[in-house]
Image (cartoon, rainbow, N blue to C red; front, side, top):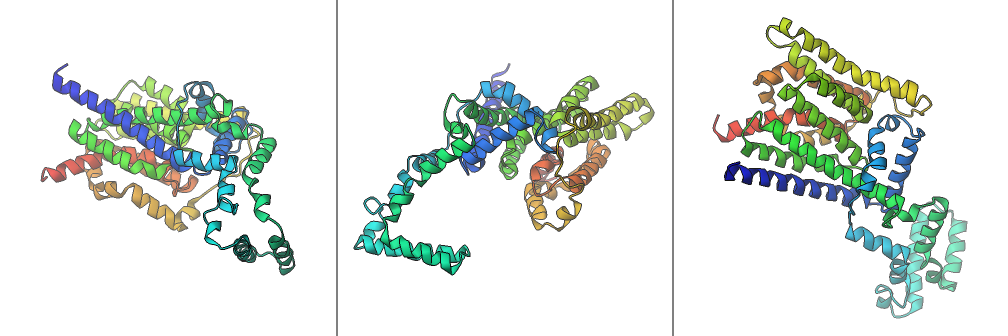
Length: 419
């Protein structure tokens, strides 16, 4: 391999791994550690009840990620740190936070007052305002305010942190284990985050391979940068699940673009339908449209049949999940979210933010022969999400983003070349 090409490959590897690590860490800091143990423990319990078929729709039907975390990634878990989250949580668990904040001997706030009596008065005034805002009746307000100045109130609450955590751990066994290395809960949480990291590496690699089908490798890196800059908008506590679906969609789109053997697409869509059947349907629609609208379509009859089969697979998998595997899974999901999506202003704001650059170059979709044939698949996918999804969670629209990105980068290249 020539030296110049080796440098490009090395740069690509370092770029993809570094950005995947950064993006995964940002998600860890902003979501898994935002409410500390609560978020992490909820994830563990949600995964466990999904594996035994007790979760609710639609999460119960996206069982592939829980299986992978339980049987693969929790054994490969990397430790993911959040320094500020650990400081706050340790301060609460050991009561250092409350002791420092409330105790007259330690509190920097208390030392600003000439006496403990003045400090107590300030606390009582604060408590009075809080009770009023909470709507507590005057009788109960009087009771609290009557006893507050007469006792060392801070001694009663400075152990609130550790007491709360002990109570929660009694009610929810394993609650405190989510931050204890070596425990099941710790490995599940960090295994999920590790899975997201690996999914992003694979996604960005296949996205690069898609992009170089439309532009040169220099602009393919521009595409990866744009993807990385935008991905943060899609993060939430289900990011590992969303990252898995995004990886499968990107691989599927690559297979369609490169026209690989349809048997691999059948395998991918079958497996992927256990993660996100709606997004796997999008890949089937792209394949079908690409061959249905080709010139001399009579030569594509067999591939059109294959396309119909690919589109049928997600429906078959969903029927199997709903009617055979988990027939008693409760469904609290509305039949349609169309009115909510059309009347929710954040659905417009977040979609505009996600597709901001792509909307500028949307005309490129009508110039490339591949996109001309497959635009109908994009339209059907968007309609499906408008009816069945919550568009403000723009992560569900990431397949459309991946689909449009190559044409966008091609438009950017033409813009800078003066075309």
